[in-house]
Image (cartoon, rainbow, N blue to C red; front, side, top):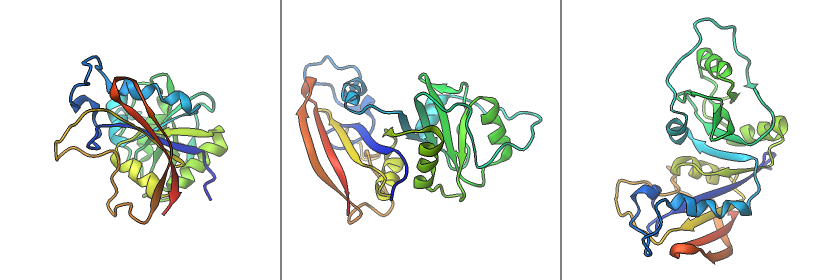
Amino acid sequence: MNEGPRIVCHMITSVDGRLHPSRFTASPDGTVKDWNKVAETCRDLYPNDGWIVGRATMEEMAKGEPHPPERFEAPPRPHHFARRSGPIAVAFDRTGRVHFRSAEIGGDHAVVVLGSAVADAHLAELQADGVSYIVSDTQEIDLGAALAVLRREMDVRTLMLEGGAEINGAFLAAGLVSEFSVVVAPALDADLDVQGIVAHPDGLKGQTQLSLIDAKPLDHGAVHLRYKVLPG
């Protein structure tokens, strides 16, 4: 049983299922400069306490360089919360590769979930930056356990999963996603080397099912599809 917050996976994709809107063909009316802004119009359906991305996406947003303190006491484990209120930006970073310039990402408080082997120096860096963190009991992060900590310690009730393909696939495979919300742009990418919006090394056949909740046309020829996520 999931003791954590409700997770809604919300993504924008091309008709051929690709991940990066910057690569999409132009909108039919020629007016859309950023398909992400079209997807943002659907987020109002989901009052939430923050959002989740994977390591690579958060690295692009955080834009920091390694800067561990020269001297520090052993930082607290298994978690440290610099703040316990307000919207949060959650990154799953197993080995501690994300570095921050600020404790906020787009105005939301940064929270990092890490594997058990993360170095104390990295935790000390996060603590000094005002970033909250959760250290998993194992090196491979237990997603459900981390969510339960967020629910218990920060009263987080709903999070938007807006990650890359791998973290989306991991959450779906773990049975932690309640709803899959997809904005399909009238666009194509077609590059065989570009990931789709979901990926998992074992595939998801037999692990999950999607039941249609609603399909709604949007401006510029896009469509918003909402699915309830069921066990396989």
